[in-house]
Image (tube, rainbow, N blue to C red; front, top):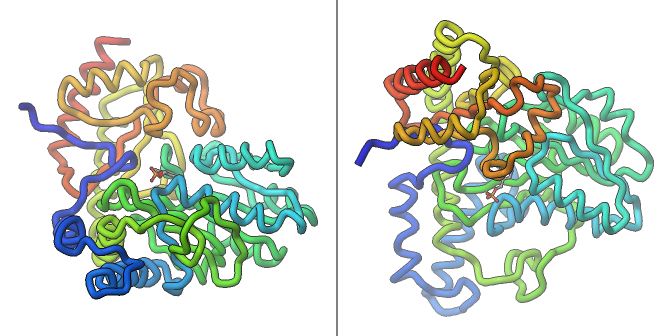
Length: 379
Ligand SMILES: *Cc1c(COP(=O)(O)O)cnc(C)c1O
């Protein structure tokens, strides 16, 4: 079998060995239900609380402000719908952006069906919102701002601290989808004035199917799911103990050597971009040149179909993406690339490369060699 060169870390990542090791006992010998009062149940409960402390420490929150969920999408739903439902007597207006993940966009669409009004902020050509436009959008009915920390397609990082200040000054709650940011950027919920934050373990070398939501103390939000009293009555259902333990370990490891990790990714990204600039004409970097996640390089190749390009790269064992995993298979151009106003000839030709811990310079060389050949033949 050919070696796989995995360059799609924004879609998902593999579980780190140390993470898996901590998870394994909770699938077998430590199988107790955390709600049970005998010792094996209490040990499961304790493991969950330790994971909660790790998550809280990583983002400078309190453990009681952390809720475990089934994924990043669920965290987004719970935060946005939960806050909206509990504040509907106060106001019915929510502000978000045009480049959010579908978990946020479709939560907002669903609230529109219920009568909420949503403002979808524009972004500039780099994918950054305009703070003036945000301020102008605020009305006395605005109850929530939800803007992502970093974009999953183009890696652009939003001015979260400034948005937090605007939200605070106007007494509006501020939630951010940090699913791409956690494990890649330093996050401080207090410094950033955050009332809500979503994360998902599988984006930072933890398991798939577990997420967490930070909701600041005293911020009201309604649960989405009825049942038992787990997660302080906000998320019914027996806890996914092993995966919660995995999420805790993964976030702890991610922030232990964040700088080293980011420097490595940055070096690969810069090398990749400079090689493209040198060797492949009519290629264009999407997203901000510097205000972007270290491992993200989203480049459009003029006149090339991104979907065909992916399949051709796959033949060589290279795993990449056209944008978000949720967009592949659909022929509609990406809502993010549309929002940054990308020209038609570039719109269908995007290739998102997202580097991770196991990648090397040789991987980049192999990718470049293939891209050179493919673009030469196809153009
Ligand atoms: C992956 C992702 C999600 C969804 O997380 P899941 O755990 O896959 O549900 C939400 N928002 C962003 C920005 C993401 O990248």
